[in-house]
Length: 184
Image 1 (cartoon, rainbow, N blue to C red):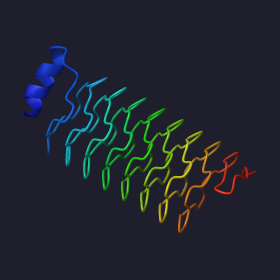
Image 2: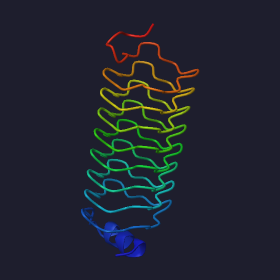
Image 3: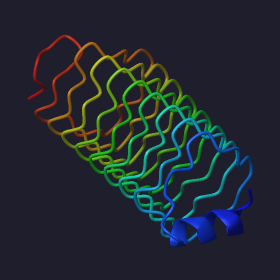
């Protein structure tokens, strides 16, 4: 299957593409709301500026993929692999990213308000200038991550690993810290 075939099937009403192998596919500027890519192989895929609201990427492989400026509101990325993925200025409000592997991912200026990143692997991820207001990062591994100039008001960082994290100019008012204390 290629990009044109997928779009044609999607427009015909087919939304379930679970397990599909689309390594390197380009689906830029496309409307794919509620598409199901559960367990799909989407390594090096390009979803730049694509509308993927309410999409299901559960257990999908998205290593090295480009989701820059994509709309991922309420998308499900539970246990998905997004290592070294580019998610610059992505809109992920209320997205489900529990247990997702985002190691070395670029999430600079990402909108992740109310997103659930509990138990996520964010080792060496770049979350600088991101909006993580009220996000759930409980138990997340943020070792070596860049959170400079990030908005973390009301975020839950309970039991998160913040070893070597850059929090320069981060806003932490009301955030629950790894030890359970609320930052003032």
